[in-house]
Amino acid sequence: RHGARASSSIYNLTIDETENFKIPMELTSMGMRQHYLIGSQFRKRYIEQEQFISKRFNSSEVLFRSTDTTRTIGSGMSQITGIFPPQE
Image (cartoon, rainbow, N blue to C red; front, top):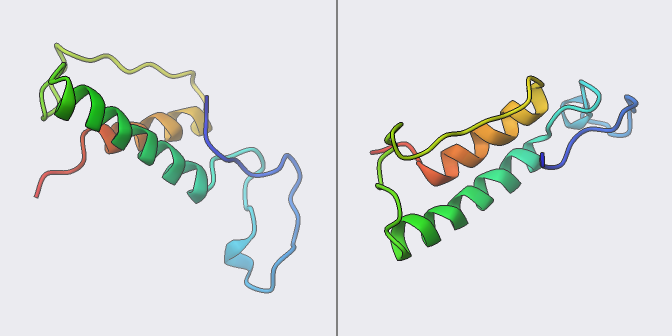
């Protein structure tokens, strides 16, 4: 399931137009954050606690799938980033 998304209609509700939804039905920054946090929880449980998969992404251990819509791809990418955050 995707995270928070923009309304199916475009509304100009704010003074700062950068806060308005530009593309109907697309994932919002809040939705991206929601999925990142879900990924972080997956990481905590399956990598840190259970040690079920490696700390670094290994394509032989995990498979990610999505429908072919921008919203669901964005949701998945945000969640993957939470599971496997960029290394410093």
